[in-house]
Image (cartoon, rainbow, N blue to C red):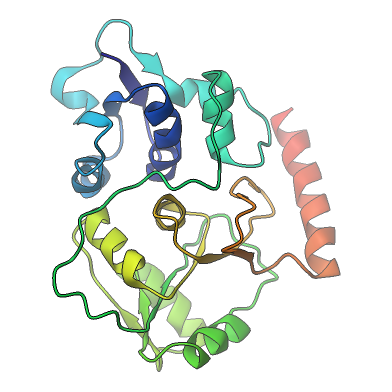
Length: 248
């Protein structure tokens, strides 16, 4: 049985799952903040190839474990984080294939709604969400559901208004995944909830980061919101140059 260690990053763990699945699965040990570990564990329990999901404080690290977290950073600027994991473990991954499973919700009514999750990390400071909010409102029948922390919701809606955006509290990432699975649209930044939307095979729209542009799958149901302006490309070139100089 294989044991995989990823020290931190909800998104890193979620994006490491396709490689773990391709290697036959096994146990995952993490060094997340304990509240993040508890939030992710119910979703991990639904994946048949994850035999166990443990925090490093519970049992420590077993002999012969595979440190996927260290391997990830050996790959510079992949098209997708998934490819970084796959490359170092010498496996082939189809970015267009879903990799997450969740239980079906009994009595699901199929309401037409959108989900947003806008985090402060990996933001394009030139991008404005007014047009996207208008698109989501015009193409759904319910208020937009905002997932994430309440502080993220308050920060976002202070700028863009709370009139048509409602905060939805979830206790863990399985609950968030079930809400995303039922949504007509998911709009977000590069975050763990974007990884969940990708993993479920859902249609998603996202803000591409000028600093860490590594979530492109090329799927037909992928929409990059800030991929079309000259200003964005100029900002991307400059910020990537700064980042390369800083990390070289």
